[in-house]
Length: 91
Image (cartoon, rainbow, N blue to C red):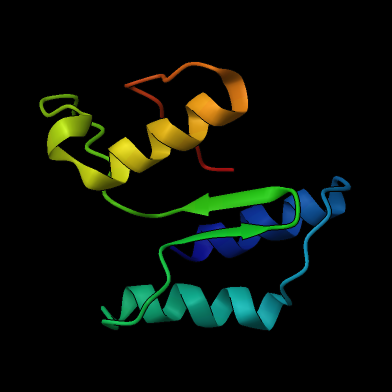
């Protein structure tokens, strides 16, 4: 999960606009790593979208049985007018 912090740092260096401090991103990642019940697993930070929820990448279950995948598809449809069922995005 530490690589996420590095990816956010690289995105900033490449010119992506973000609003959260590196300390806040680190705090959120640490909360997920420690299985904190209140951990934030999805957030929009300026031009970055971070989604660390279980999307069911194996492809065995569709959006109807994976709430996080269904929500991701709804957001994708709003942005691009279509849903890619088997999508894996790191940034």
